[in-house]
Image (cartoon, rainbow over all chains, first blue to last red; front, side, top):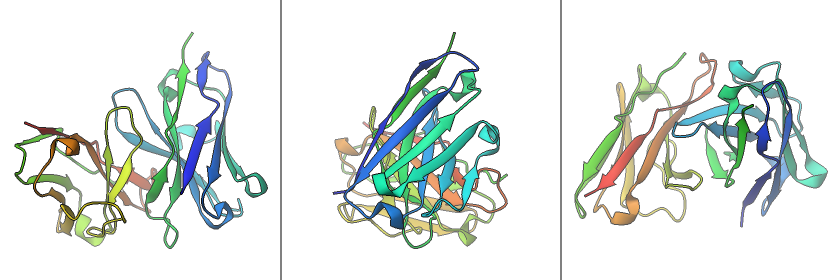
Length: 120
Length: 109
């Protein structure tokens, strides 16, 4: 059974940093692109970043470029999101999601999410 | 950037058919994927590549895509289908690349 378990969320002041983690199990982690998708309170879904199987390619939504860094450790079956210079508008539930195997077009499994609140 | 437009809400009586639309410029030339999200839960993929269903998703869920509109159809609606539904495409010209619609709240009367 595919499982994705996020951790690391919490309350942080504007300008602060936070590192999210996602522990994957039930599939060959190193064979899949992985993503972070977020959802602000009461709002819709927004793709944030994703990373290729070997970490050689990374993509970010414009609003987080230069502030967020996605990474992975295939030996630990783990995905990470380092978030720096956090803003109030980054407040959201952050989901770890596996991308479809053949084309990376969609997200076939999601974790339960971890809440990040940016507030003073 | 590419924009996907969904109606904020759709209401349907139990046993009837619900149709949730997703509008986009020439969306028929793209592959559309649909997610169901119940309150307090993570999204679940219900349709991919316009009309394919993942294992475990009931046959009552179907999809179509043509022209400027993609449609998620839920037949014989049940109370448990009440949720938010999001469409999604991949668009290389968008700063978001992986673009979601704004979501549609399905209410079962």
